[in-house]
Image 1: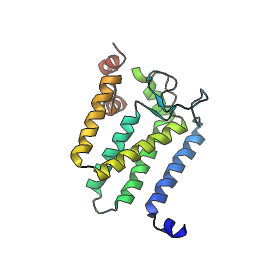
Image 2: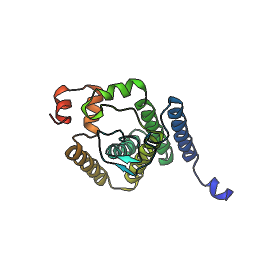
Image 3: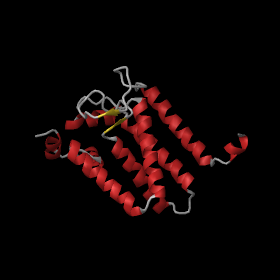
Length: 190
């Protein structure tokens, strides 16, 4: 057993520590461990519901997978000589940083101004942790897949969520950086 543990790269322990830190910080922020409804669902498919961002997965899980795909590509480009295990740890840190920032009052209040996020209260700790796990899945996919397959998956997820819920990672970034009123009306169904 001990010999097997020695084979695990130190970066994996660092990534696990980062994930633990993410959970701890969200707990200290007062985010609920699970949905305040008192139960856990595998999928929450209603964007404008109190269960959104509270369960294991939802429409925004696709965006977190894209984070992993993008982090893999960007980190490989910026740090080509760093072993993939350390790039993995950096990606977990980037996602954890986003998950913590996303659950600050400033960002929660900013999201509430958007048509699809009215009533948003932040993520449950379960959802936030699963968001990071979705990023990890995306990172691992990109590590093993051809670049064209990774790019194709990003495009497919962006188009799929755009058609299904009028939102995706691209629109989320636009609304976070520079909200556009006409885009907000369109997303709200107007």
